[in-house]
Length: 557
Image 1 (spheres, one colour):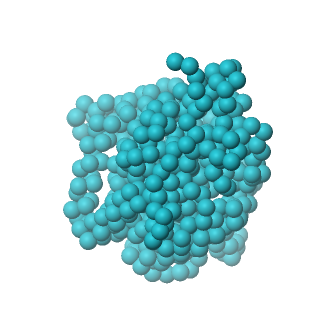
Image 2: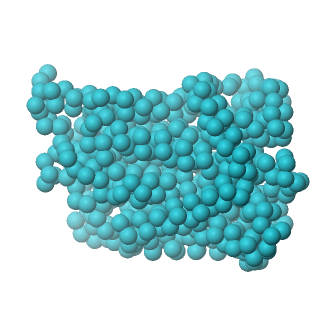
C-alpha cells in the first residue's frame, strides 16, 4: 500500500452551548461521576470502601506485579531507543524549525516541580532511611540493616524508584502527546497518541473511554502526591508553632487535614485560573530557587563527603544493576515469613507501588510536559525529561538522606530522625542541626521548607486541574470557564481528604494502584503507536511526503 500523509484531523464532539460549552460531555460527565462516587463512598462508608479497596489492591499486587515491573522496563528501553535512533532523534515536537517557548531554566523548573517536587521533600530523607534499615539484601542476609555496610544498598534501591523508570513513564506520555498534537495538529489529549493504531475510531466511544481512564488516573495519582504532602505540610505547620494539627502518633488530625487542604487547594485553584504561562511558571521558578537554597544547605553544612560517596557509589550500583533490577520479579511461596514471601512483599510495597504511582501520574505530567516542550527535538526532550531530572533526584537523595543517615551513624542523633514520622523527618533533621546554634535558625529553616512544600503542592495541584480540563475539553488549551476549574480543584481536595480520613495515605495508595492498571495498558499502546508513527514518518520524509500538519491546523497556544 502506498504511503499517505499522516492523519491530522481527529474531530471530538464538544457542546456548543450551555454549562459544558467547549467540553466533551461524554468524558467530562463520566469523569465527574466516577470521582464524585469515590468521594462519597470514601467519606460516608469508610470501613466498607477501605475493605473493598484493600481486597482489589491485594489482587492486583498478587497478579499484576510482574506486569508493572516489565512495562516500566519497556518505557525505559523505548525512551533511550528513540533518543539514539537517528530518524527519531532529530524530529521536532512541533513544526520544522519551531523554537521552544520556555527557557531551559523555566523548562526544568516546571518539569521538576510538577513531576517529583512534592515527593522529594518527604522521600529524599525518608526513603534512604527506610532502605538503610531493610531492603532485599538485608532480607537475604547479604547486608545488615542499620549499619554502614548497608548504605550502598539503601541508595541503589532509592535511585531505582526515583530514577529513569519514573521519568520514562512521564517521557513516554509527554513525547506521545507532543508528537501527535504539535507535529500532526491533533487535539492535545490522550486519545490522539493512539491514532496510528485506531485511526478515526478515536473520535467516538473508544476515544472517550481512553480519556476517562486518563482523567481518573490523573486525579488518583495526584491525590497520592498531595496525600503525602498534606501530612508533611501539617508536620511543618506544627514545627513553626501552629498547635492542634497533629495527634500523639505524629499523624494529621481531622482539623489538620482540613486546614491543609483548604490552604493548598484554594491557592492552587487561584493559580490554575491564571494559566500555565503565569501562575504555574512563577511558582515553578520559586520552587527551583528555594530548592537550590535548601539543597545547598545540606551539601555545605550537612554530610558533604558522606553525600558525595552516596551519590557516586549509589549511581554506579544503580546503573550497573539496572538491567537486572528492571526485569527481576520475586515470587512468593505463600509461606508467611519465608525469604521468598518477604522479598515478594517488599517488592509490592516499594517498586510495584512506585511504578503504579508514576504510571498514574503520567497522564498529568506527560500532558504538562507536552505543553511546555513544544519546539524541542525528540532527543532533546528525552535527555531533558529522562536524565537531568533523575540526576537531580539522586543529588537530593544523596545529600538530604545522606545527612540523616550520617547524623544517626556518626552524629549523635540517637534515633531522633529515624523515629520521626516520614513527613516529619526532614524537619527533625534540620532542627537537630540548627537548634544547638540558635532556635531561631531552626524555625527559619522549618518555615523555608513549609513555603517550599506549599509551592510544590500548589504547583502540582493547579497543573493537575488545568490538565484534567484540557482532556475534558478535547485538548483545547485555551482558558476554561471558572466553574470547571473550581469543580476539579474542589474534587481533588475532597478525594485527598476523603481517603485520608477513611484510611490515611494507605487508602490513597490503594486507590491509586487500582486506577493505574488500565492506564498502564494505554501507555503500552502509546509506545507501539509512537514507534510506528516515527518509522512511517521516516519513510515519508524519504519519499518527500509531508509529515507535519500545516501551520493553520496546529492547535492555538
